[in-house]
Length: 189
Image (cartoon, rainbow, N blue to C red; front, side, top):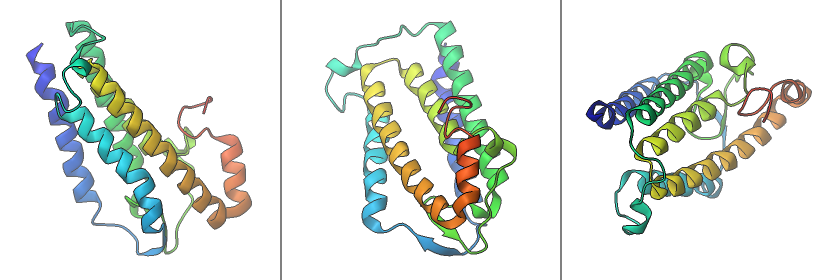
């Protein structure tokens, strides 16, 4: 299925374009994580993305496929990428001007608990992880799994920092939200 080989990158490029456009309309930052903290999740995120996208970067052995590139698997991969990116865009739209690429507290920051935030506390990360799982499935090789694992670790690290910021900003309100809504996977985690 040649369509799948260009459709997944095209969806990611469209998502990146939207993300860059939407990043312009955000509230002013009141508090931001320090540079060392940012590096603790940005470096593994970048490493994972590079590993996933650059063939033979880690040698030819990790190019071996664990899932044959059948039309059925490619259709599943495309669906996962589309659902994941769509969910993250919905969450980004719902979050509105409170969004930031870094862990921050915005001026007049609001705790959003509706829309996708009623399903999970970190729907952007949930959507990205689903889309990345689909991308790894599309590639079907061990290199993609290594890259995916690094990105999962990076997002879990960023999630932990964000959780701390939200607890400090919203106190008991956030504690109740945290007790009621899973972090990434509805009803599970």
